[in-house]
Image 1: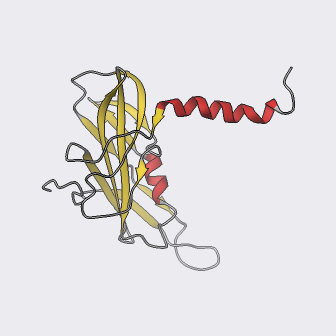
Image 2: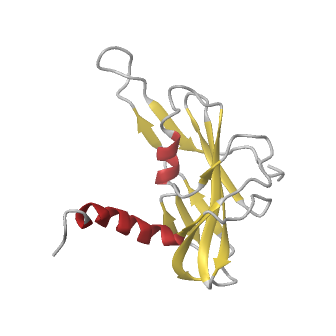
Length: 168
């Protein structure tokens, strides 16, 4: 029989079970990270960096993200772009929702900044070298200004400058 005290703890216990796969003990950003990103139509740029690593015989993905030229229009939408992101390793979809990644403050060189990692159920293989990140196009807003309208904000994946000391 479940007590009244135990019932509210169920979501907490379920959440604790989920966090076993997320590690804040990631690595530091360096030139081995794959960098992708995109642009908002208001000028803001979202950049995501990730790499595959081995953790206890399993494939893990470590990563971080940052925003350049934040605006009041898109300020609360960047996390939605990251949450919609997907990581593919060797052509296989291995991580949906990149919200586990560490958000870092923008700088022209992010080498040495901390990342977070998520451990997948997939076994590690030395062949796990080919990593791709996809950030799907998204639109927010109904269009126009006024009582019933808001600006349409569009995000599109596209080229971004390297923030890890790589040539672009």
